Length: 358
Ligand code: PMP
Image 1 (spheres, helix red, strand yellow):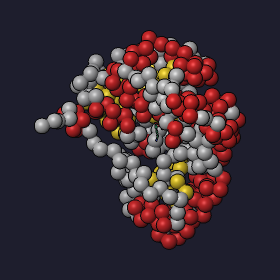
Image 2: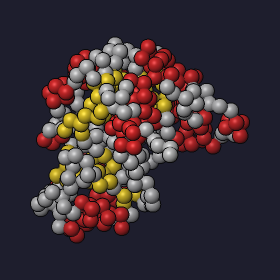
Image 3: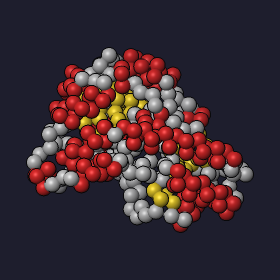
Image 4: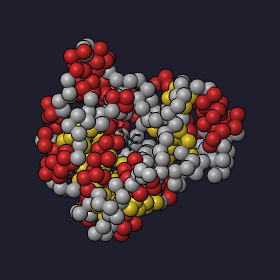
């Protein structure tokens, strides 16, 4: 009988709750405004010919490299950051190598590392999701071949300083160190300028969040040119589709649209955090386009009650250290007002905020 590899049989199935996402979608950290009208116009201008031929990635890759201030050999366009993670795992992980991650974090690091038959070592963040730098450094051995850190992190929204990341990359010189900057535009700090300087440092970016293009599946992986040549070997030459490649230059050119949206989200993040505070709910100050809030034992009831009101948010109760927590995506002004209004009603209805029980 045909049998999948043991590593694959051991991978936990990951089913994000995508079904029936009708209403105000504040559950996947997408943009609530969508992409710029210029991107949409370019998309609408595409004809049958544009789709008839295999996509050519390199010219667009060169534009993205210029935008990031890197050389074209340092940059690979990917099918979202998800593929960038997958490629790093297949390029650098041998069976039984160690992959270190700090939890709670984005699920796909553990999934792709486990699929490559590596041993995933999870290091728990400290109180208030404090980054466990000493524990992480202590866990680095000769077997450590991948370290993945989301900065800012998902689902916590917390960020760590550049010198911490550089210290990790210098300490684990035999490991690929991925700094996942999926939420860069809402944070404003990047380590991308250090790629190439440290040959084991990789940075991932996405067009799924601030650019409003999650459905097109485009991300970027940046690293040392020689290392990226190795990563390229495990990628399909057609990994990014023609539609994504056609609209990406428009998306890059109209930076003011992205900056405007990111600024709107940052303002609304402050507004939401202030509101959560005055409602007596415990939350963690965020550097991304979402806020993690501790609802307590009523977390599932809370998520359901919001869904009944047409607002989708994400229950993160099962993430390590996130007992009773729910993640709220922050979007444009109107969706934020709608969320805040519903939160006030929710606190009344469920009697939240007076005392947080886990
Ligand atoms: N990294 C992090 C930290 C994320 O939160 C997400 C999306 N939830 C991704 C990567 C996935 O990005 P993409 O859509 O580019 O695959």
